[in-house]
Length: 259
Length: 155
Ligand code: SF4
Ligand code: SF4
Image 1: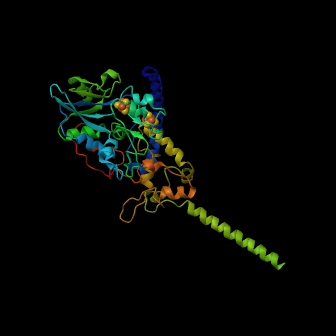
Image 2: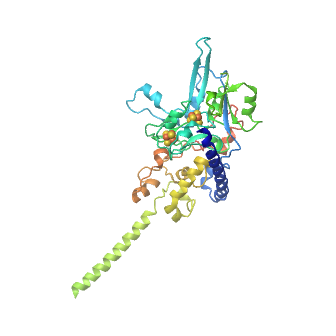
Image 3: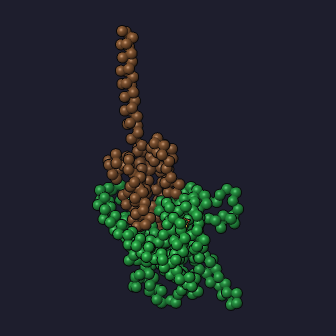
């Protein structure tokens, strides 16, 4: 299945890469004509496979009880604007509300060793969520970010079943308040997109990694897996690290040290 | 004879009245730009007005795919651009939801009886717009501990 789908993805990637290049050329002169949208983000050249974005999580630095990354993600992506449906059970709501990043605590029962780690979409190179999607809504961008095109998503939730990391959430109810950068609609699935809105406007950072650094933990390093001199590759070269469920051969973009 | 004449006069009068009212209607239809919106102060939309009236959705839909798959944001045919330019403001300067009754998008869509689903998912007022270079400057050190200062783009 995986091997079969690979040439298809590659073709699509080339096509999209070319399409993105063309538009950049066509749009740029238009931007000059109007000052109206100068307040909106200045576009970068668009997504390209010259990058593959990823994260390194150093679990030894991830503090017990700290939720800085989770809170920052909630704010950045408008997840804090979700409201509990009237009369809904609190526990049920906590299970159902969309979360892009979760704190997971592991304990080795023999040694008592406790490990804390944040878990989000791992941005698999061979994403099962994309393989199973019947509409093509779940897709991988040229730069390795796995996203849902919610214009095409029919809410079947196959991808949620297929994801080994429980990374995806379903929006059960109409959401009243939305941020411009984070649309959100009833009946669609969504998950971490590595703050694509930042990357697309030339800001190489994610809310979670920024927040973790601001707290002084430095447990998250964000960067380009294809840049051997960049901060991520430097960090990966220094620390022994692995993928969660490495046995599945998904070649995730998010790597963990200390597990 | 007198009857025929009066009929003629009546017809002429009617046709003039109808013609006038049709003209008045036509003027009323184009007039959905909110006086308090940024759009009211610029000469025309990102494309000529007549073109936009008929084809705005073709442009938005094309840009949608550019943005979702190609990561091109803040381009001139983006929906967030429509909202930030066409949103009206009340006397306190608070933006009014663009799909609220009488506001830019809904007033024309109501008139044309075309249902609009954009705002089931998309923001109806400019709020937390995608990052731009102004915001990115605050994050000069990508992995550093830069404070998350709100800028005009984030509102
Ligand atoms: S972690 Fe889950 S949602 Fe993310 S790419 Fe892999 S299978 Fe898809
Ligand atoms: S829920 Fe949406 S993204 Fe997921 S498999 Fe179904 S159509 Fe695809």
